[in-house]
Image (cartoon, rainbow, N blue to C red):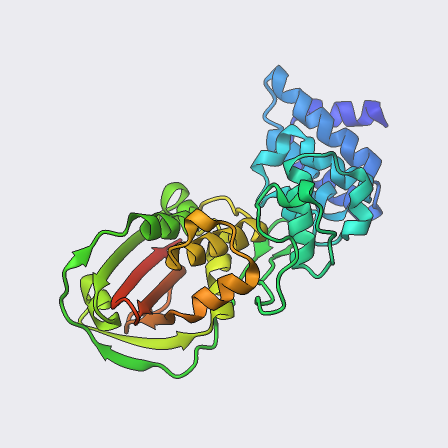
Length: 326
């Protein structure tokens, strides 16, 4: 069998190799698939352009193979180039109980724990796991059911969780003096960093004294439609954006998306120096603010996150628009 695999890789016919990968997955021959992956990765040193096949084989092993072989993919050199973080891919079909004994100590182990908790596992609150993101591994009861993606053999599907908006109210916007709020702006930019640095995404941000009409006006809008959001809905949609790579960026994973949402909400509460807030405190702080999603008459296209937030006690508002197109 090794001779047959050697000949297959030596020809460097990518279509042929991919058909072999498909066949090995169909027959569930994971050991041979792992051997083919390693031969494809090693063949790059001889000038053969087989790295994409090695990456695909490693991805399939993470998604479908036995827990031991799936866990080993996290340390493989090809893991960096998969369509999503393998710590998320491996969590689709493997439980924490399946994987725990096979995962080496380190950040990858922690990320898998977070990803499995977001898919329903009750993961022990081990400090070695929470060290990777600092926030609780298991979502609090008031947090949303975070939208996790569906990985297939060649692709990933991760639609926005905010598809059906409540009835929207029209807001007439007015011009306003833009203030500086670097902590909140940095938190917003962190959420959509993959959109703006790895893809075609653009971000507009404004902080103002006044209400949401002033914040939206500071973005250059004359009119917008808004709908209120509960704190759990805010975390849901912000986590979705933070997990996404946008049109062309690499997906960052639901665990990273939830972290981005918590950091953003903590920044909005002006409490970054108290990071991480206890879940109950974070919820209470978010309930002090008024959260809205906003739209214009432009059609929804590509990836977008458009929020406006008001702090009625301090007469401050913030608005931003993040969009990415394919």
